[in-house]
Length: 316
Image (cartoon, rainbow, N blue to C red; front, top):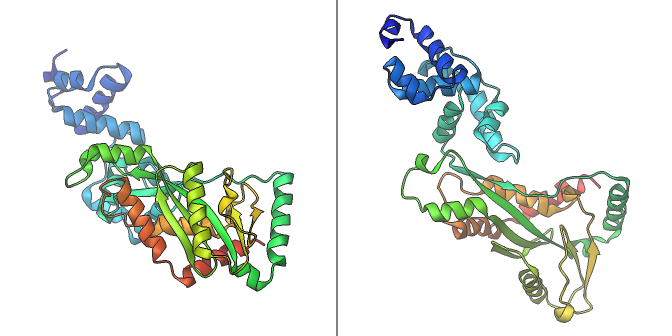
């Protein structure tokens, strides 16, 4: 069958034939383009739109896309940048609830200036009777402390993030260290923090947290606090075997209920870091991300910390 017979078809009929050849008959896009004597890019665009939207109708015009990208949609896009669930372009499309291609979504993201986001790796929330009981006991203990002692409670936590790049490497302008970028994408990014309701006692960004790293961090916290007051350490997530050689009687530990991150002010600190890190400039490497996280942590104000405490104490 010659391609000559298709020359006088309407554009819509052309699109239908492309889908017939590629999707239903299993021909390659190159074969379809050669058979119809048209550029392969035309075939690719029609097939991509069909797979994304299940339609052969033409895409929105540029003017229509501008009308779709309303201030309301832009505001929603900003909210999706800040959440912890929206990761892929399809996630963004679903969250926005608009009938455009994922390529259009990517262009909107690019127009907004955001290049990447960090997602928080957190324990899931479980509500078994045992855990609910532990939460109740923890809240009762926490509220029983005097104000002075509450100010000397040190929350120690490992905040873990994962780097998510929007689009692909070729879509990012400027010089790119692809090896460093691949390492960032495949590695966890951690920042150890020790905080009270008044100040950040200590923080340290690392790529890996093991027993030695954790105990060295804890020893540094003890050194900073000194032995003139009594302090209570609350550690979440997990507890490595602690090296107590550096401890003095004025330091004690209290168990934090697992799967209950929202009861910990560090949980809200992690959200603050996630939403306030510079996301319009691509990091050069994983150390650059760690430096950005440490800079935000160093600049936390007393008001920031109090807000984290208010958020977790709301559930007591």
